Amino acid sequence: MSLSNIRFTIHEDWTVVILGGLIILLAIFGIILPVPSFGWSNGSDLSAKVFIAANLQSIGLQFVFVLLIASIGAFVTGKPLQHFLVSFPVVYLLTLIALLLAGNKQVKELNLEAVIFSLSIGLIIGNFFTLPDWFRKTLSTELFVKIGLVLLGSTIIFADILKAGSLGLIQALVVVISVWYFAFWLCRKFKVDDELAMMISSAVSICGVSAAIATSGAIKGDPKKLSYVISMVLITAIPMMIFMPYIAKYFHFSQEVTGAWLGGSIDTTGAVVASGTLVGDIALKISTIVKFSQNVLLGLAAFAISVYWTYTKNPLVQDENTRPTLSVIWERFPKFVLGFIGASLLFSFAVPAEMNAGVKDSLKSLQGLWFALAFTSIGLETRFSDLFNRNSRKPLYAFLLAQGFNILITLVIAFFLFGR
Image (cartoon, rainbow, N blue to C red; front, top):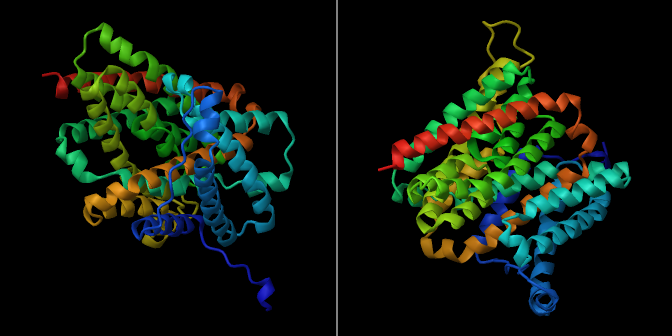
């Protein structure tokens, strides 16, 4: 066999662990990318702050770096590299537009995140323009978002969570377990298939988009179903983020209770921070700790879901007395979770605080960029007809009812633990 016929491929999850680890190690060893600025309020700001040479250079460096990492990922996962090198700059340009829109001062005041614009731009172009099949096939949604999840692990510092006390961890554990089981039971009552029910339950109970993606990876889920869940999470997060702080103020909830309520109910971390800011510093601190505590549970939840799915849905299981081997469980286990946990352990116990302070902004910026690229890709490959049809109504009803239960039970637990 000639070398030209040998196709070098690595499983996508292992690719993500390697590439995410490489990004983190490069930062630790001093290769720190400057963080571009996208903040502006008018046309003058765009020319004076965003479109200046130094900032454009930072944007260019990020593009070259991310293109290199993404190209390696495309190559080792078997995607046609020549097509990927054409499609990726297009996805990046659309994502750049989303970042610019989200950087506007008036948009920031509305607490709209860049991923909302990324998804919207992708949906508009993907549904109103005909994209070539080769373009759609080169979209690397899962690769992008899983790299972002590995980098997210670098922000989960156990010492920070424990320093704030154990109440946040207790609330996160109680909320995640109770809401997840209620949501899953509700989905079954509505006859939602188990695959979609898993994604909905994790999204509502743990941490929204990240949990839905992690669950999809754990069960090898359908990308169309994942896109549907992500759309529901983002659509509901906006009104929750805006109205919940005002509800808390109207009923005179303490900042501690409000922060715990917001952190345990709202599904996206950015929305939690934005809503906590509307209430006050104490609420912001508590809400962030509770949300980070839920994020800590992400890896454990993905592992538990992958084991459950292997035991109940494995095609090799012929009857209830047959159980998959450890090798089967390991084969189905989402390896990117190891990258997430490894990054968290590394920055929690091995990386000095001063080094962490020096790299966290760069890694945070890259994490946000990978997520934004993923959401642009999701939009480009998603059809409105798949999201809003007759078959989508029952999952939507289940999601909304589960979210309502989440809001109520989290408020009760917040009063019990923090209402003193």
